[in-house]
Length: 569
Image 1: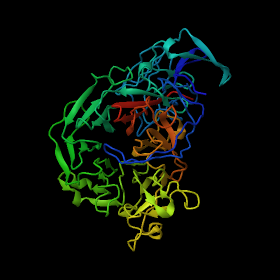
Image 2: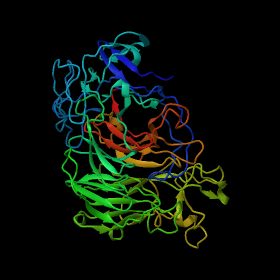
Image 3: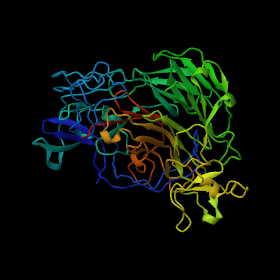
Image 4: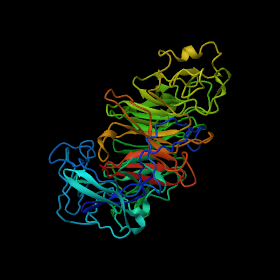
């Protein structure tokens, strides 16, 4: 069963709910191939899809949930607005009759007994609309339900065509402002998400947006690859989207294509050969002259240079391979530049080889412990006669890597990771095998690749050709407690695999030991058959968390920034 995007009436309060599924599985097989425009392909298949089909896309809103309120003066429950040091929405969020208490660390919300629809928007555009009323065309769906606490909820679905213009909703039972704040007109068509989540087009008409970052005020910065520029986006009018009038081009610099980071009063961005920085303190004015930070990065081949800063201010730059399978380890690596060296120009050769043997580690991030993680795109067109010949459809697996120690080797171009091999020859997901080009060189055979002193094993092997391009650990703020600590990964999608795979955003659960506790499950994906189709032009790239806990996801193929919020129980 698929649920239509519509309105739910909980007793006397209207809330929006997203187009969510009920657990139906529509996942297709994986897709292989190297990615064009900045990242090599990789597929992630065999995922437990978790079901969730949703026709018509996710709407603004979500099922209102209980237990999501932020408590007075203290603990923030699941779904509450939390964050590092507490997230404050400038001006607070108001809703008719709503009461949002002061949360831990300074999450602010005004208890305004009746400031009404329209609410107050903070920088970044979190809008809580109260007092919404639905009219006409109500179709009874599900009858009466017990909503908890002795209350009986009459659940009525209203198609969006019959619904009033409601831009957001207040969870009146939990006392938490919804982050499903996009207008219904911006709902992401043909999107499938877990129940209670919503997705909408937050910004459009961008020129291949790739890397994404957020400043302290909540503004969103994106690299527009096809224009070679960094653009700042905001939502000052609080209508849930960043309109064409709500953006500023901060800089246009030839070759900027992906990497972006903010650190120490500077904005950093990269081209295929160079890392630049500009003095930046969070304003909305065009930047001044650029300073060159790193030069001489090898060009051609994989051309994106993802940037990351650790807690000590050291800079990490990811450099992908020259070809599908290189002949040596000289190029494909993660390099580190100490914070003390960033005031002067350094070369690629002067960087520390923090990790080698990484074919194309496009997505890199820190977890809550400050450890560096990455997602790696595997090679294409893999074939080994002793393993069944052409095995490229499901091999090599894309990898989730933990960089626990500097200076370690991760396998490429000598070793690859099994995702799924034919019965009788495979040894299980994550097993290391030698590439056919080196397996007879006298050193790099299968046994050598499986020796943990030679090669660091991946923390997780994922469906071949999914093309993972970004990873972020969700620190909490707007989503249920089970999301906190999970890794969110974008799968850009395959180019030479049939059927195609990827084209989605997945969640990887993590356990108390700080390691993956399960396989990736779809979080935002196409609601139709397979992983892509004519109604799904999106290829997710970059991920950022908004100041209110929403997710912002770039899609270079469709030229948009997607926002994902939550309004469920």
